[in-house]
Image 1 (cartoon, helix red, strand yellow):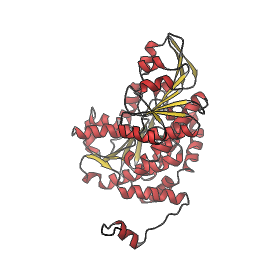
Image 2 (cartoon, helix red, strand yellow):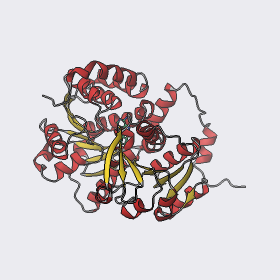
Image 3 (tube, helix red, strand yellow):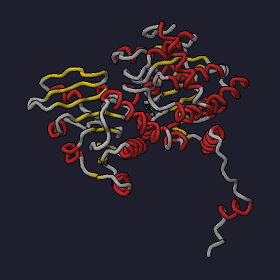
Image 4 (cartoon, protein in one colour):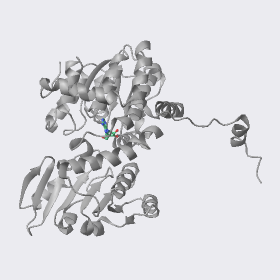
Length: 416
Ligand code: ARJ
């Protein structure tokens, strides 16, 4: 049983998945090893993560390793209907279509729970929060869960602080081979890709305002600069602000930046970053996009209230006319622009994120029942292994420290 938009798109979706497979050598290698061992045998995996070609490679790997799977998307605008169709045609239970309303979004989550998951895989923690909220009857089957993204980790850390986490959850986002690559290079490229697909504007010579200078903001700022933009960063964290400044960007408040920007990109994970006052000060033709997980960073509802009228001028691009005649363009309804207006991060970088997902699921299969409820980091050995495998597939060799060097690194006696 599945619910998707159009089964006839399966062929096109399958080609895209095969393309992704050819760019995800680490995950494919792990598929080869762990499908032979049936490392997830007996597991039932409920997943709630953007339905893209890269996710499809992960889902089919999980299945090949012996698990049953039920899947749904984790954002109303990120599902690629051809990929959903290809997965459904491959007899994978999937509930996802692009543009579903919030009521259906939660209906899809509920459907995945019907397999009585032993493992959950989240991006944004909606599955975890549903189980901890109104579906606690599902707790008894659970070995553990994983979380893909920084916003989900914020939620989990808040739950942990309140003593509310009821099963072991590995925060894949915080692996170095995830957040230092996916969040930085992945979003850096895919967010700009989304903006370009929705607008085809020239980045050279534009003032690009990046809100937030965490991993994601750093990636976007660096890529926008590479395209010739003049980048302005806004922050609330003094250390991040200082880093942005010393990396050569102008740093100022959003109040100031809102008067200067041609393109605004939010990457904070926090609500109300761009709101009424800012819209009121923006230049004619300003473009506003969000790269954070939830659609809370840009107050689109507030803009709807002050705008005289609006029209959809291109795919994923809404033109708002303010009472004084100025036009402001909001991309993808303020939802994450890289997945809503483009295809998400390229396969090469998702390779490492999803290798971490798979290895974390295997760890929870073997050890989850003896782990206490709580939030767990990816083990450093796993992180190292993913990096080692990635380098190997790229044909890159690195040095090995000598015995003497290892002794030196672990000693304190030797100085000048
Ligand atoms: C699936 C993707 C893709 C992609 O790892 C990234 C992250 O942290 C999420 C925030 O919601 C999105 C996720 N991501 C980016 N690109 N997931 N397929 N191609």
